[in-house]
Length: 362
Image (cartoon, helix red, strand yellow):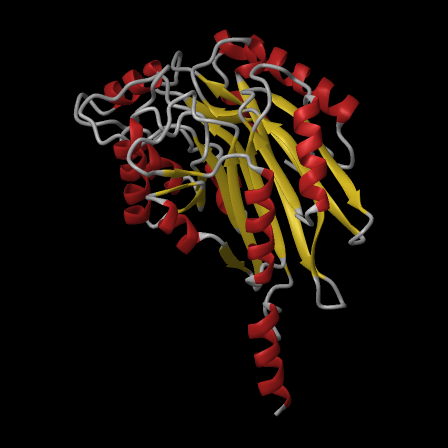
């Protein structure tokens, strides 16, 4: 009878059963871009037969796959070809998403300013392609009915029920013309969906937001105000992207609910062909959630590390993510780019981070 009652309670609350893990590590990476130079390099790597991204993530993949659940922002539609393009209107081949999945990412965020670059058809095709690949995704939907059916999105990660929501400030002035639903930053809608996610049983609520000003290393008032709003709505993690540069990482206190909340203003780029020093790399953030002795799951701590988005050259035939613990792989011609980026990022983090240290165990 006692086991039956515990099983029933576990089903209702999401609590782990005896012997199950009581914690989970979530990993977050920034904007996965696909500029024309990246398309050209992937095509060359494939010998003219498709697009080969197999080299891009080999060094960072062990860190991604080590997490219990890994998330990145897919900032390109999967347009289906045959003409794939970079900036300003992106369209990438499906093999790009496959490579990100193979690197260990479990979820793609799709609500961003480029999600309608190829209009409604490509936005819907992106959803279908991710579904066919078995990749979780949030942020864009076939239509309003599809959004109502798929939100809340809750994932059981090591026995802890984690809800994910994703919103963007806009879509570069391109409106949906055939009913595609994009989750835009709207406080009323966000409050409703956060509540619905919690009511549906999420113990941890993660809200990913595409916000801020491009290339600015500190959050603006709008970001800070929205972060405060989300904290007051009871979310547990706020994960930001869009500026293409890193911004501070902070743990703040929700006194009303007596819990810590992770606020990541921007993770910067994950992979791109951007050229200015601050855009040449980004941050990985690892966040740990644990179930306490009172049975409640909480965010408990986070750390970060950095990486370079290296360009082809020297021994590299393709773009490649080179983490800080493998700087021996950086081509000599790009070492100064790494040093300038990492020094600048660490300067921002050292001055402005709150309780989110750099990871030093690599």
